[in-house]
Length: 86
Image 1 (cartoon, helix red, strand yellow):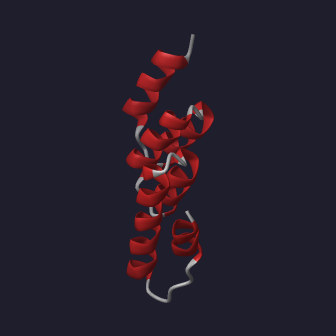
Image 2 (cartoon, helix red, strand yellow; image 1 turned 180 degrees about the horizontal axis):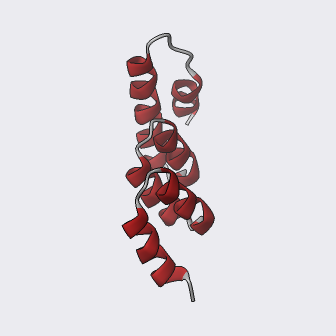
């Protein structure tokens, strides 16, 4: 887990290198069950679809919808509303 935190906080000059580190951190966080941290990393690199999936696994409905909105994933957002809106 320390390695994932290190990757997430790593300050890189290159946007491509930063995205690579965040994606690697997200995958590490996800693999150890830290779904919200994984989602935040995916969100930071604008991988909104994967962020939505991770937030949903974590049970964070509000952040799921927020990521759907920011990523213009309206169809997925409507499905989530239908599933959890009751």
